[in-house]
View 1 (tube, each protein chain N blue to C red):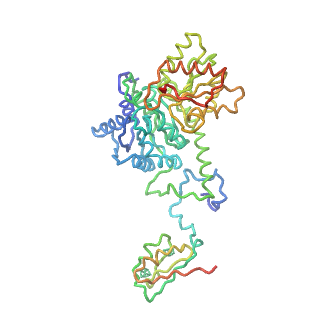
View 2: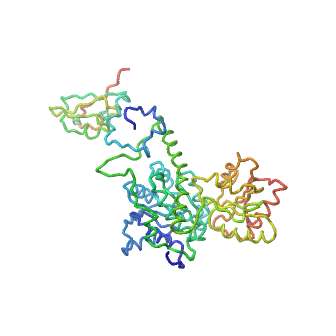
View 3: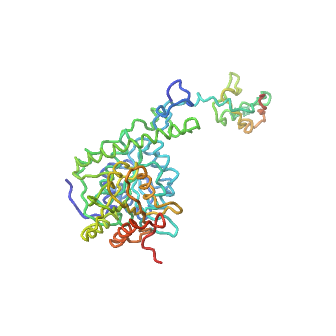
Length: 99
Length: 391
Ligand code: SF4
Ligand code: SF4
């Protein structure tokens, strides 16, 4: 994709060869956070820092803080609920987003 | 130049693929294509061909493996027929969209049911719109020559599209014909090593095949379509170069005795040889009949085609596939559409012949030409008719 150009405005002449993505790891530019209708909320009391939420999350949304808790980055969290579902301690609750 | 020797066409094709120095073959055997990949596996096993031979569990896997292979920059070949081609269907569309230049020989065979291992074009016509470059061979020498040409065109950086060389199953694949395989030096001169601009390489990672959201999908398809149309020039240039190196000339559309022809037969593939005999006979009898053969099916050579049939009153299109419920066979539909905007265009009549391996004889071609003469005066009731059906 030409730098700085919104995909939605791209001319067919600017489509990269074979529609390839030539810039590795550019998925971080794709802010999936705005898809979200539910938000994961962590209960640190219950969390055992096993990291399953971090591993199973399909987006680059979780990162560990200094204490070892996995904290969600809402820029990328699309609200799929996988983390809440996988958590062995029930430490994550999906809360509906206010509109 | 190499020696002209009698060879089964399938074996000669495998030898040509070897001369093209392929890196990877992923294939699944199916009649009548089997001899091609069987011979290639022998060549790999005996060490005569230094390539990876991937034995897969289906044609779907064969084509998937081919795409992965060519994406890494490996020259890749496969071959199939009928149900095998149909099983590849899903993957066939992906290759050109991702600009992955696999070369495939399809030994054309009827699709089931009833089960038929014999020749017609129903398998490839069901894949008409996949976006591969496609040629149709008339004889063994041409089949071999089209293989060198296919690699040369497909891998050209201005092209980068997959390529199918169609050969009639049995009628060509199993014939023993005098065939000249050129010296390796000449093949090397004609076919440079495959050097794609982009490839899958862990040292320089890229992604192929991402999602195309509605904001980008149609632009991606437009880009693919324009690039494909532009491939025409390279197809023809590569035939010019072929003539320069090997001395044989190929054109997108061939004509035979078309000077002053009022009726023209239009056909693709090996039956054109029989049709030529019929044309000779009819010419002797004073009938002004000629023959047009389409070699390059995709991208469709519109200008060459229109030029080839110029001045003809009746164009009798002989289709080797039935498009059930349509207004004609696939070639006739194409021809009618191509001619629609042409002032003084010939009338098009359509015959479906030789389905499922039924012989189409010299007499059949004469009958079709006679019918075309008849239809000059009296319009046919139906847009197409089947030839040689027992009542
Ligand atoms: S899966 Fe649950 S327990 Fe494990 S780290 Fe994540 S929130 Fe904590
Ligand atoms: S809800 Fe889905 S996207 Fe959001 S943090 Fe959990 S797993 Fe990741």
